[in-house]
Length: 313
Image (cartoon, rainbow, N blue to C red):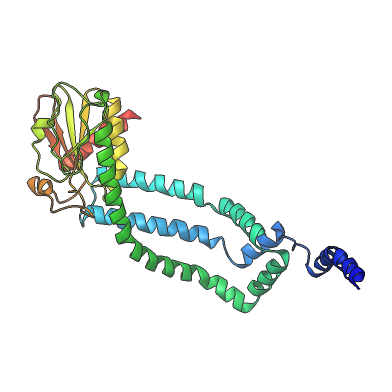
């Protein structure tokens, strides 16, 4: 009896292996590229690319309208807006073009779906119910995304404010001798600009507090004061252009005036510096000649600076 039991036990591992080999099915075949492409056509997935780009353009338009605060854009404003829109659209189409998204869908679907599952999906989307769902799916996604964006916007603005404060503090700590005056920590007073030197990069001042522009003029240089807010899309679009102008023109210095107080979410129209200069729209530019006299401001300054920027190309 014991001997028979031992023989049975000795054969158990082999029996178990044979049993599992019979019971467990082989790994399902992954979906073929041809079947995935057929599903993408039936599901009208290409509309996803169009939807993404359309939503992005709508967001840009809304941001511009908020920044203009109800006023009609000047010619210089429109040039900045058009340039920004072209760059954003080009970047979106490059990243979200359907050929690129299609390749991504093919890889992801092949990793996730078996051929059997893909055949089932094709059968569903080939049916009248499936086609009705495919037609309405983009609208569902659009409405859901709209609700989510509305809920996320306040949180993202708070996060941007936190990041902005941290960046300002880091920039203040890392300022070097070659870069001129350091960027001030949020809310801190900034020492007047050395009138005999032009910093390598534009300095940032104010952070919502009152300032005396004369303290930041650079002797012998045309000084451009750019009143801006991180929450202003046209301001962000203008930033690299002004930095390029500051870097390329030895006779021009740019000083950026941040109108936002630390912790304020959105454009801080109620800040002391905004009240001091009666700001009603941004970006707002003031241009001082090398002898320290006000040369242009508002629309005149924007047109003047726009001409200087165009001349760089």
